[in-house]
Length: 90
Image: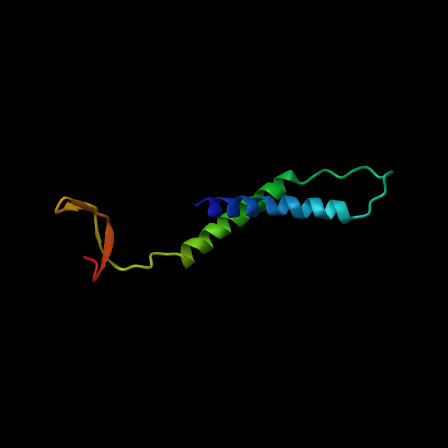
């Protein structure tokens, strides 16, 4: 789960990093006034990347198992964890 959260944070910060790299590599004269930073556009593009990754993740990692879910229960004094039994869903 930490890996997934870290991935989302990195996706959100990607536009800011690319903009910082652009500013670093662009050769601007010191006498020219500094341009305003596009914080709103960077924030919106970061959120767009995160939303797109959630959509792609939801499509590719969808419900892979079909069947009937059996809730956790006690059987002969032992706890049997929940699982999906293959078969047709009712």
